[in-house]
Length: 409
Image (cartoon, one colour):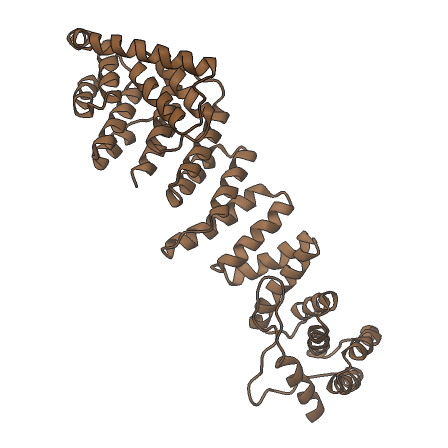
């Protein structure tokens, strides 16, 4: 049996890199391994193959192994030894087809240890995925993850395979797990994982998962682009909105420094003008022009600027009278609070907003959302978060959740 032990040692001592990973597929055994239990026909093949491998004739070794395909594997180690001999030569020849064959035969061999089966299975999956045999790849990724549930890289590879299989709910599930593992370790996951998870939730209309995915994205990457794309995705799903709602979305984008397109500026400024907030419109238009996202020579822009400037003077002049009227009119009180907020007088705005809390004549989600925005501008993050948490329903609840992420919750 010395020849067999030598052949087995040769196989086990050789490593290779496969796919995206690079650990050795075959490793050196213990110093005194138990001799494999082989049938005589397989033993004869092993001896012949070992001689060819020792001589460096790996193509000949693979041919000899192929000739023995019909030889019955009757003893417990027959299949595994033949698979590992094929693996050894396939590695030396860098033949991925034979390598996958050998690994597949090995993981299906009855005498393989669970440790080796786990190690080999991820390489079977990787090679199958490279060939676009995604069903086979998923079978072995699933087995591997059942044994190694915290291997983030493999979880993401499995998500990619399921994307190819168009199994989007599973893609979402796997990416969520991978992101959760990274975040639990105090690390950010890859940006693309957050983005693809969010897009998957939207494409599959996972209504209860869309906002968590988008919020996870902007919390991990609280950057203008992340907020802009996430907000636009939500707005697109909401369909047509009135200017009162667009005003709140615009204020959120402004607060997140996420105004990145001409349309962002025009939509916000138009909503502000329509809702009687010319100072806000003037501020937004001037910023868009300064950043060269708006062309002041275009008619629509120049007319909006003129209207904002003229209405702004009227608005400021009429504010004292509105403040008096606000004592008896909750609707006017909200206008005054909003006007003070966009004039930068946030402390006074908060006083008016607080006076409207609990008033059934005014939408309380609107009051809490706008009060939270004013508190956030004042630097009162905890007060802002409490106000946002009180926003309970509809699109404004989504806006409040984005604001909470912006506040660093």
